[in-house]
Length: 284
Image 1 (cartoon, rainbow, N blue to C red):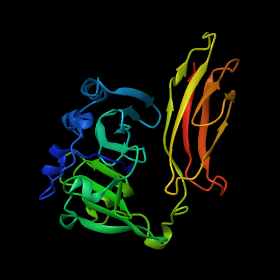
Image 2 (image 1 turned 180 degrees about the vertical axis):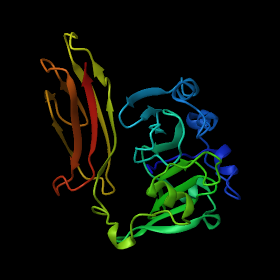
Image 3 (image 1 turned 90 degrees about the vertical axis):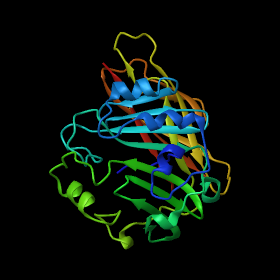
Image 4 (image 1 turned 30 degrees about the vertical axis):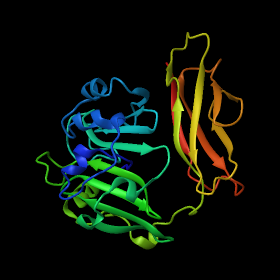
């Protein structure tokens, strides 16, 4: 399952004793999305006032943004073949919502009663990293050093929707644990203080071959717990990067039809030891 943050009074108030004191009008409309029912058109209509950053047809995801959050909606592949496919629902049916804050949020600022949730350690080499979750409610929150790094909304295990006929899907629904396919000693964080990419925003994700200019504006959002000076590094499978830093241009001029990748990473002095992020642009 992919995981990120949602802090909505409407949603948390329905989580058996969870009460969020943090409110954000930016994500108020997200509560209107009905997981395992809403389709892509309905989601786009609900989030009409938000900026649609990208649609990844191969991964079945859409990314929206506000001034302070990134909202990622995960959809069913329709074939139960995707990494996030737990429920056998129609293609482009919303199966998860992930919302990331630009910066981590303290538990105190949200007011979530963690005692109502099950608890599981996330990384063997990060004693302060935990996942608090309730599968029956379709809710999970990731916490590291008393800060919320992400919250996940997903289909409830009590849903009447059919489950995909895969070992991973069946394990996730039937198991009480969060990590159903890995043991704690197998889960290692890259480096506790490593910077990481929060978001990689592309102004365009598709061109036609006849387009004279094929320039993509790239905005990279990164987070570093140590507030180090970051060097932004990009690799592409075609074209060239123009500029430096978090805002650059990716020129695909002269390339043939195909799918081209861009990977962004940040270096705080340890090399590219942190998590990277990859996006694609298609030339038809």
